[in-house]
Image 1 (cartoon, one colour):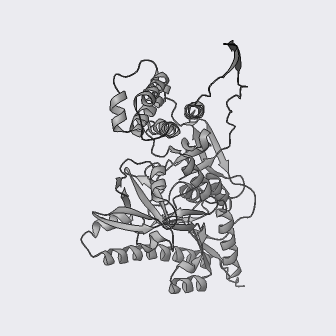
Image 2 (cartoon, helix red, strand yellow):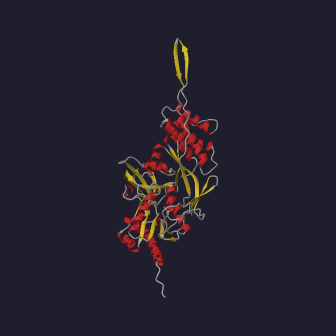
Image 3 (spheres, rainbow, N blue to C red):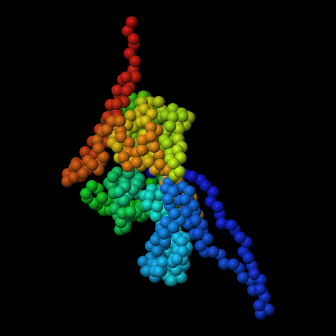
Amino acid sequence: MIEVSTRMRISRPLIVTATFVLALALGGAIVAQTAPDPHRQGRALLDEVVRQVKSTFIRRDVTDDQLYAGAVKALLESAGAGCARQVASPPPPGNGRARFYAMLERVEDRCASPQRSTDDLFLAAARGMLDALGDQYTRFMDPRAYQMFQQDAQGFFYGIGIYIDVKDDFPIVVQPITNTPASRAGLRAGDRIVVVDGVSTRGMSLQEAVTRIRGREGTTVRLRIRRGEGELDVNIVRARIQITAAEGPEGLDAATRGELRRAGIGYVKLITFNHERAVEEFDRLVAEARRTGAKALIFDLRTNGGGLLDQGIRLASRFLPAGQPILHIYDRNGRQATERSRRGAKVTLPTVVLVNEFSASASEIVAGAMQDSGTATLVGVHTFGKNLIQSIVPLPMGAGAAITSAKFLTPKGQDISKKGLTPDVVVGEPEEALRAKLKGRPEAEIEQRLNQMRADQLRRGIEILKRKLQRSVRLPAAA
């Protein structure tokens, strides 16, 4: 997922000196202090969500009433079914904002013990506002989720070790991280997570799915996985997951490593862009490949679901001459801004980029820029097809939000939405399609065919680079 970190100033509520009223009664002095507003932070949160949506969200047709209708719906769900039955009828009069606060007052007055605290009710209402937009990539992050998001960029988290996105109304595994509880449990790219700890994930936001799957180290999460036409239940113990942004050829089999070495071809797999040191890790591995004699490069973006936009632009800048366009961004007003390649160290090696249907967002930005500029040959299958950009905004009460704020086109104006990039050399087919063809076959046979297809993609990349290296060798001229 592409996420643009934005810093903005949040106006703090005015701090007003408490007013004291001095009254004489029965010969004594009575001091009265104005009561603090228990809703001050909650009001600030909802007001800021409305402001951010009205100024940032990619669609301009969103109304306050639409947002507050979502807030009311979430408020009642959060208060609990019994409480909702007591307060929902008749609906309060007034505009959306007035109706929400009237409904909140009913909940507090009529429900002896709503299921959640007032702060929790406001956090739920803020989530409901963003859910009302109907955009699967716009999401609210409560304080814990926002803290987790910020923690990710530092390189670790507590969970099972998977990258996920939302597809066809369910969370989908984009990539299990090597040597984590998820990979050891056998989770695979393309697995749909349909239940988490007994709760259906149909229609669940990405952030809610992430929050439910993560948890304290040593605790267990129960998942139901849909793989092809079948389902399986897995129990996975959470652990501290160290995020590795990139890896070299050590993950390949010995025969392939030997072939790469003999051919003078380096190999770098970028796992995620959602890491502050993604580009530095890439640079380190490319430098290492050059030291061992690499004269060409295979850059593997398969199953890379994206991450921070700035990391994508920086990495694309490694391959494109300074000043060349990397992507065109269109905001909610239709204004275009072009991000161009930056100055700095360049990778001038002949390059093949491997992609598949799980290469998404920032991966598609980099691969699209390299394809359009002719600096690399794309090999594999159609990419994911996500051209939306989210802005990350901090909110009151320690919360945050990812709000879809723009879309992008490739340098040549390709709109990849829902169709992805078409590789220059197509090898194989989407893994789900292959699984469908092999339906009913033993799982071991299906996995063998998938591994063979992935190996074929890498082998084709090696063949392309070998030919390029042969053409670059100039023979002595005869005289």
